[in-house]
Image (cartoon, rainbow, N blue to C red):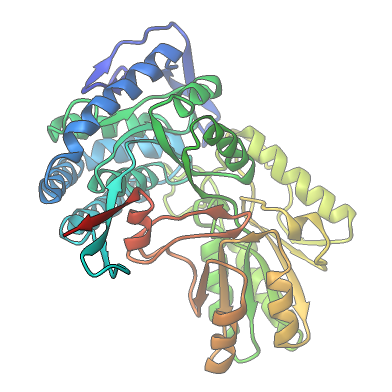
Length: 474
């Protein structure tokens, strides 16, 4: 797509305002294109188009909605290279990783298409002999989908697919850091022949996002983002008492028991921590190592962190790529500097490299304490804090002593300890002897400040429904 346009009411629409949003390649720090900034009128028109389309869409048998999702999946596969190329340029990912994100999203879409014959209600016994209670699952209406920068295509599918199969229409706002891939994605929506206005994708500034989310026709707002963004969305929801579904920040604890394979664990930690420069909500953020293996694990981590190269992935795909923007680079470095001032030891990394782009080296911190900011607040970058513990009870307590509760990780061969963690740790997910990968048939849902509602699987799909109780006299 040589000139980017917003997509709503079934067509690409010329900008109604001259305002543009610059898009920067984070590996170079250079603006490479711009996208239109939707106006309040554009956002309102998109919602109105979605409301009209949803009335027709909800009346279709669910199996026909599933067929439409499969058509959209096929159109995405046909355009995977183009979407991947746009995503790589705007995100700093390698072309292979960016294109794989598209194909993985297609698999998720096909998964949700299979819910067509599986959306269930309930028949409930009445207190009266001559009536039956029927609980139906119904669509909500128009859903506003707010998409993050780190996995913008996968998350777009993660929200659009279950919303559509449940009978809703959507208006999606991609991140201003990564908007171009979403607008190329819209070409697949057009090619799939979905009803005009069913899926709308617009780039916009925050003020217009408020107009979108507070439109009277919006019945649900789904966000993947920071806690601060989630609090703003909850404020938006007040306008219509709209349903929120929020997947917010995380501070994944990794507990390493003495019986773990320390060298293998260290390699997994470094691989997971440097994936997309640590900009993953389930990325390892704090490691709790048993005192008997702490020094050995720290040494292995230091060696692996120091050896992990970073740079422009168009030149070397194996490198760790850049952060999203300069603000993230400055924020993360300031956190590392404050940790250093509080007594943490920077084992490796911990500096802003010279040259172009928003890079930050893999950074390992030892000598950390539970009360430090670097342990309490989400970094969302390639920085890892390591702490020691004396026994398993202490490890569980430290892991749960936190405002976040998204994912958690435990390395042990002791099934009793694994089950204790599974029944006590304060997080929506526990991964035993592996790192988070959000299986799409599961349910990705955070506790505490990590969110409300969730994504994936049956329960993620049902987030996009509401219930109607029918009391049938007979």
